[in-house]
Length: 418
Ligand code: EPU
Image 1 (spheres, helix red, strand yellow):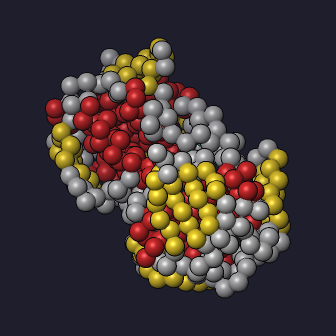
Image 2 (tube, rainbow, N blue to C red):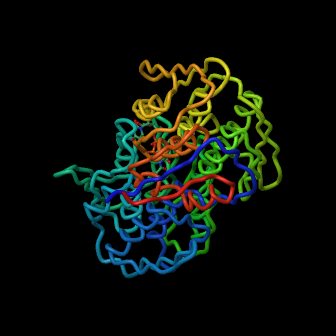
Image 3 (spheres, rainbow, N blue to C red):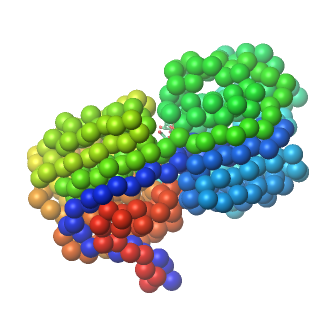
């Protein structure tokens, strides 16, 4: 039995929706709670599988985790093991944050190589380089990364690539290290700022998050705190693009518009109206958008996580658009699925050349990864006829209440068991 989404397309999305907490913040913040010697209350958590898996991982290590309706309390005082379960770790990328968190707290960690979306090679050499600079010894045995230190001492670390994961992981490990740690060429994503704010609320001394130099002065102890997660810019961007692709009029609430600047700018370049309010954006689209070129760049550039949804909009735009994917070399797997729906796309290495057509036509397709799944949903909403999307496990990892939110905007979408 497999669950599928069935979408009857060619309907304008109209109305209002509210955005949930950011997945990529949540998956760093939950492991970060391990560092506290008290209870952390995390609010505005998205109701997604990645969060459920992290809760299981924490419980498996002995932490007491409670909560419902977007709130979780974590008491890490009862943790008995610094080893992460193999099967659980495989389910998601963010299990690697247990390395930084356990290392910071217990000076030792054993974490299997993480899972997550198959969008490229996804090395973690920069995380390891950071841990080693802080004084940890790292070895890999039977697919498990083992880290150990007698003492962690602050260091100056220059990242060779701008990495969200390495920046967060090093911040976690360095919070309680002796002395000053400097991360240069750090990632600047809003998630980094969110996690730094959580750590500072726990008593850490992290400065510069959101710029490319982060300075962390180690402290002896971290205490419990309360923290509310920022809105999910990728979920918001997904609905912005869906509104545009269906020639809709959608007010997207609970967003931070400055986080979406690059997306808003691109949509405007395509002739779509984007109105920004204090904590909302309104997308109004009439007719076919104009084709544009898009290059994915770390924040504040156009996000790789919205490249696949954007490719759907370009496939029904007027003219030829070019996408250059500079972050993940394997993030065009959805193109074959889009082609089933009639899209005219040619991929050459990291570049996709997209000749816009008038309309996509509904077809059975597969979600090859999380954002590919979101892209197929948008394609189904905009297409003529019926689209069936399989392999929903990816979408469930990252989008809260997708069917309900889209239905409230007038989409004909349902989940079936086949
Ligand atoms: N990289 C290295 N070495 C490292 C780490 C990264 O070479 O040690 C390279 C990667 O191969 C990639 C680039 O650096 O080319 C950026 O990778 P990054 O470490 O920033 O990615 P990540 O932390 O594994 C997070 C998000 C991804 C998002 C990327 C880029 C989480 C759990 N995942 O991944 O989100 O695409 O940053 O912004 O936060 C998604 O939400 O769909 C998703 C895949």
